[in-house]
Amino acid sequence: MNNISSRVPEDINLEVIQNQIGNIEEIIRPVVSNYIPVGASELKAYFDEEAPSGDTTTLSDILENKWLLIHELIELSELKNSGFTITASLLRTHSLEVEYAHITATEYELKFAFEGNDIEWINSRLENVKYWSNDDLLPHELRLRCDELILKYSESG
Image 1 (cartoon, one colour):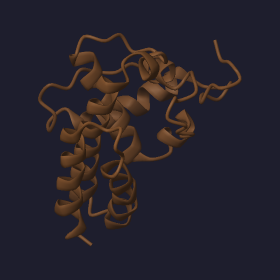
Image 2 (tube, rainbow, N blue to C red; image 1 turned 180 degrees about the vertical axis):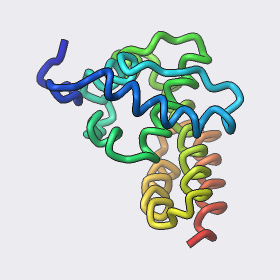
Image 3 (cartoon, helix red, strand yellow; image 1 turned 60 degrees about the vertical axis):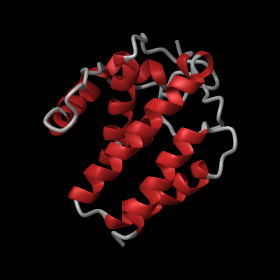
Image 4 (cartoon, rainbow, N blue to C red; image 1 turned 180 degrees about the horizontal axis):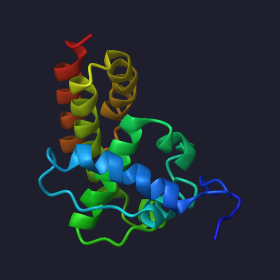
């Protein structure tokens, strides 16, 4: 059920989303060996509540951007690999695990964007990664992984 703070449009079509997910999963599966498929209802559920971080990215934003959809599907797969059921509350109840999955997904997102030669996207996302790298609330290990991404992909532009 959508609430005021939902990041999911009211007129969402799960069948259309599932087809879109299927197309992207064909790209992901050969590269991410531990990928667990994600259903449209799981993707919707993940965005069905306001993000505690203040992130205003909506499900529509994700579906309109190939790299963001790759990112979210890998993030959710990582969470499923850790034994979680995908719900909106994961963002609140298991924020540390979500952060780890988020950084792993970002690593793959940038890898796919690099292979797709989308330097503009990489440079844009590196701005986010730089911000995360300076976030004292992020575990040191994850900040180091952000720094590695900055070093690796700053040279691509």
